[in-house]
Image 1: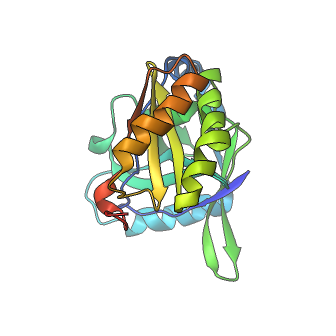
Image 2 (image 1 turned 90 degrees about the horizontal axis):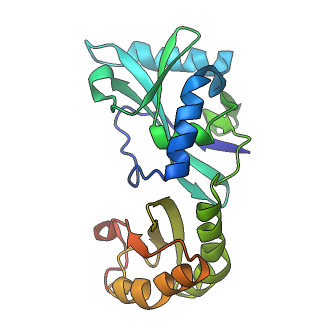
Length: 223
């Protein structure tokens, strides 16, 4: 599937890096075969070199790639130029055609075989990803995502909102509210009396649902 992404040294990632045990195992496996994680086309490399040349920094800059969310159109990506000092301890560092690339640890299992390209359109141009991977790899995350899609979102959609799964870690499902639910004053009640019940009953491996939403940025704080 192809998904667009924009590049900025100022972009802030959305959500927290949540990695399940199965994801950690996948990271270890991917680290052994890191050269298979990502391919960068000539056109994308040309544009990346342009951004690197314009970067105002005395330090060596690296390209960092992360998957920061999932939506109806597939994975949502974040591309940033960062200094080596900004790299996290568990980031995977690759060298692709002489270009230093960092991949966020929780994103590694979901980027295997991905092609980063740059495509020109009538509206301009942008980076895009051809990613062959499923939205979720481990069975628990898949099950939670299905409950959200089949049971949770049809309900919250009646209020103009939606819920996205951020990740699963040690029996906790991390979710984020969007649309009319972001900033909703009743979100705690909705979470505990509705969403958490649906998810924990549908997926016994989940014991708690945690809201990771920045509700202060919502547009309906008194909805």
